[in-house]
Image 1 (cartoon, rainbow, N blue to C red):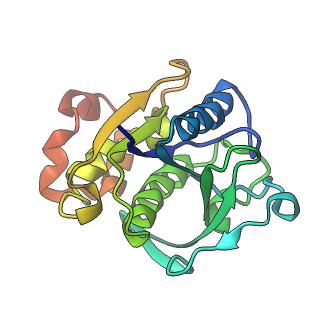
Image 2: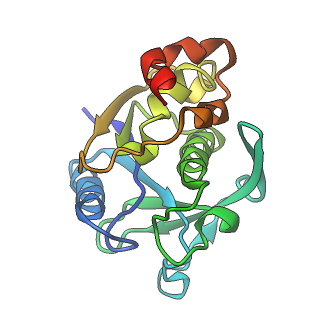
Length: 203
């Protein structure tokens, strides 16, 4: 049975890489594609990605889209490329204020916002593409809030009514630990109880 699979990853070979996560994301997408699954890969549009080599095409309806992450406001656009030799569609979430930095990962105070924004934008893109993934594959802490967002902010979105989630941990040493004060950026409102309250008190 063919499945629709959205892979959300903070890096993917050959576009951008710091470690094994990139290798797995790129190879898994290719393998699923060879298995005749409708797989689509979403990654941040880092400044280090070679635009002259991969030439992303603007996705209609996903240009200069407003995005709210808690009290923060961003604007993002989506460009589409194809992974070389595999035919896997890749969607780059472009938001220069968040991803035009010298490195993929930083110690900047908005590091959690960079990947909360990416995760939200990727889910918004699925809806705008009128594409309903059956599986949303999250990778490491960067996209680990996707299941929570699907249960709250995107609970009524038609694109995700049949979606199930999978979280793959590639390196347990990197857990994305931030101050409990950052929980407000999830803007969960009445759904804040879904967070682990003991962790929030400890943070």
